[in-house]
Amino acid sequence: MAQITAYLTFNGNCREAMTFYQECLGGELVFQTVGSSPMADQMPPQMKGSILHSSLHHGALVIMASDMCSDKGLIKGTNVTLCINSTSEEEARNFYALLSAGGDATHPMQPTFWGALFGDLTDQFGTQWMINFETNQQ
Image 1 (cartoon, rainbow, N blue to C red):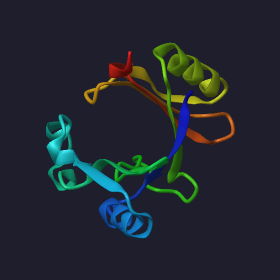
Image 2: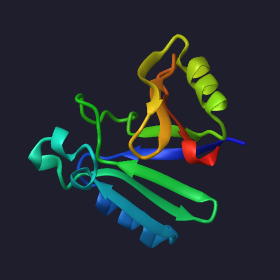
Image 3: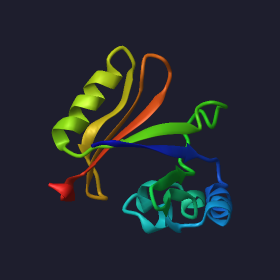
Image 4: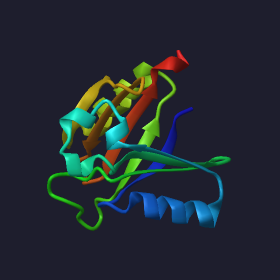
């Protein structure tokens, strides 16, 4: 069954916030910086230390986060995205098609460098979604 995970967006203080959440909630915390990713050469030098992706896992509790905000910056209410971790490619593509209907299909489903099929969108009600399927699950 698919799961929904909260995905938080920060503007340069992701490491600080996620470290705080780990201190409060416990668990294993992992960071990937822009500079350590395949995207490093495509990004401005000042972003190399920014957090591309982080995750905090403690049992069933999962919080993910990033410093990667849109060109518009952070707007209150747009710093939380719901991420669906699908159990099949068909399920992921179906969720994406249904949720994006009448909304904004920001980034269509496509293979990623981290080994997933991934896309994001804003639905017709303004809720931001990420759809992720780890292709090594098949």
